Length: 41
Image (cartoon, rainbow, N blue to C red; front, side, top):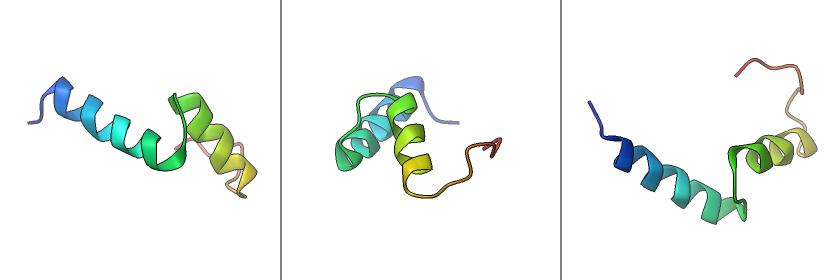
């Protein structure tokens, strides 16, 4: 099991690499790069 803080740290690093501030921005970037907008993942 991992802690909530570990998840937050991982997400922060991912956001930093992508230049995003939220999961919504990451999702929008993924769609802009060609990911299907209706993908449930």
